[in-house]
Amino acid sequence: MADVSVRPARPSDAPGIARVQLATWQAAYAEVLPAAALALAPEDVAAAWAEAVGSPPSPHHRVLVALDAEQVVGLAACEPAVDEDLDGPAAELTALLVEPRWGRRGHGSRLVAAAVDLWREEQVPTAVTWVFESDTVVADFLTAAGWGADTAGRTLSAEDATVRQRRWHTAL
Image 1 (cartoon, rainbow, N blue to C red):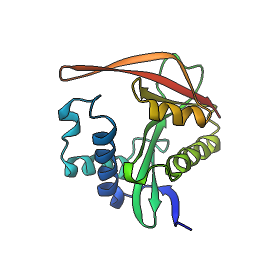
Image 2: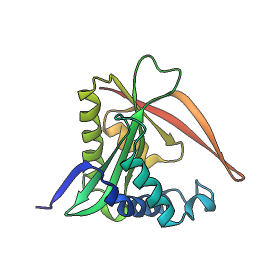
Image 3: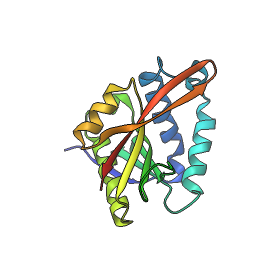
């Protein structure tokens, strides 16, 4: 049996988190994100994650890591949702990434389950996340996990590109 787990991230996990983010973005979003967004320096990404983990803006800003043995293979980041159209308090899953070579082993499901457990402890009734409209892999995963797309959408601009995202939600 594999030694797999999810736990809160530590600042020392930042290089592994950066590796997961960069590998996942390069594999999944090469046709969605501008080249500059994919050409980030690993040390800069690691520094940003070390800051997010070591000095979160609130106790409700969290980063979880999925481990296979002692190796970071995935991450989930969450914080309070700020969308003005939401009816009441909600949590937002701002990142859910599993390094492609570790996919389809349950890491994403374990990360989402751990995040849901945290939100339920806080008695948050709803969770949301934003998904690129072209990302059918994440959309299918969320659908299987009981999430659904709602009517909210947004457009992100970077360099000369614009990409559309759709909001997904689930009741907790």
